[in-house]
Amino acid sequence: MDFPALAIACLAAALTSLALTPMAARLAKLLGIVDRPAERKVNARQGIPLLGGGAVVTGCALGLAAFGFLADDSQISEMRTQLAAFMAGGVLLVLVGAWDDRFDLGAWHKIPFQLVAAAVAIDGGFVIDYFTNPLSLVTYTLPVWLSWLITLSWIMIVTNAMNLIDGLDGLTAGTGLIIAGTLGIICFQAGQPTGVLIAVVMFGALLGFLPFNFPPARIFLGDAGALFIGFALALVSIQGYRKAALLTFIVPLLALAVPLLDTISSVFRRLRAGKGIFSADRGHIHHLLLAREGSHRRAVLWLYFQTLCFSVIALSFAQLEGYSAYIFLVAVVILTVRLLRNLGVLDITRQENPETDRGADEGPTQENSQ
Image (cartoon, one colour):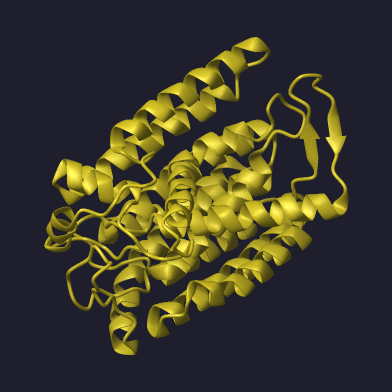
């Protein structure tokens, strides 16, 4: 790939996001797209603007445009269809998310739009179309219907996972930045230039946005930004899965471990309680950390650290072969279970603690929670 063009694309995305975020904040206030604290939300401050996602998607778009202007035509022609699908699906989710931020759509009302965005991406070439048997190492081509089903499910899961963890200032933006960098390296190792480019511009755009979103946040991503980040990371992870390698999809799974583990535990917890899977509660990992750490910033930094640890594990796992990969994976699973148990995440019957909830609500710098 053209590395100078990649570097300029990253810089363009970062500077665009950095410059546009204050404008997005003013526009959000003008349009009334601001956070409104409620009983189930962590944020207790009135009127924090919610259009941060607009600055992030614009940064990504201008970063891609910069790369297209500087890179060789042969590189761009090979990626044009996938990049167009990425931006079309991403912009759709940003518009739906912005509407939700303003008028409060129900979670189920957003699902059809997410399905359309995922279908656009799949039609553009983001497809999980191979599976490698971990025992025989034989690679199988998936039937088209099964490939679509698996890919559609993966995009939906990751998109909503990043939205679900958007509960503390800077959490989704910071973890998204770390995951984008990790998946970009994985895509480079897998020889997937489209994934590398999307990861690089996403990294730059989030880097420019994070100074305004880190606690105490002056602007939130909103659903528009969280959905776009999740959608982008889902597509990059599809590009990064190793089609002919051992345990093909473990590497991107490890990179996305924090949001995925939080989503899985949330679904089980709500089903056990007889609630809808999209109903709000205070059992997310960030809620438990906020109660344990007693500091909003420490809780966010702890989750950054955990995301970084899983990212390093993912990069290390990508280099392993044979039985060493299985041994390494078993060790990671054991340590992850121990970590989640210590946090209380595995207690899916856990009841909300009113005292803890009130303490979290009284914090002056918390963002909205699902």
